[in-house]
Image 1: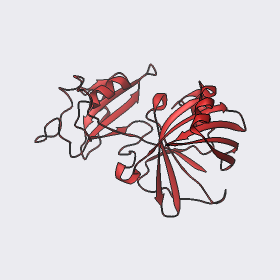
Image 2 (image 1 turned 45 degrees about the horizontal axis):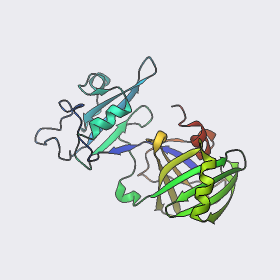
Image 3 (image 1 turned 180 degrees about the vertical axis):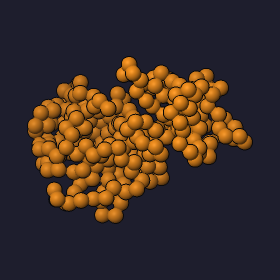
Length: 249
């Protein structure tokens, strides 16, 4: 199994508009606010000297922005909550591309037409040791899974269970849960699974592909904006994300 972290892209919704950045985030001449911009909106993030993060929203252009231009824009936001409020002011369907230290310029989650419809997953761990024991609700189906091993070689046994059994076991997973949407994309002979996490892990995207052997190689498709390979990083396992939260940058 090859696991990689993806850069993320946010899509504006149709929630109540916020006054945040309303007078600063402006499209290019001839495009009115409230209509989808041709080049989208760029969301920049950076770490300050104190260790906290700041965010800036600018309308997209064909050139790279200067650091001074980004950090002195009229729309510098102090936290993720403020970013969400600012994005809600944009037109529904507007692409907002994240350009942070990890994401790299121009990277984003694959377009929805490539991802297709995702499946909602609710997953919790009864035991996060090795072997790990978990219950999962994937769409309308429920499963009990036992997994062992790490890295490219793992063993897994999964059986389907009645929904009532899942609900009885779910309370045993308190404090060790994740929620995510899984998209499956076939690219050549490779079947990629892309997880979009929610809740406390919102903004994290992981892509995985099963390899025929440990020595096998695969070329990621161009539509995946890869940040780094985390195949052998235990902090990006679902059970670690469920019990320890998001890994530090």
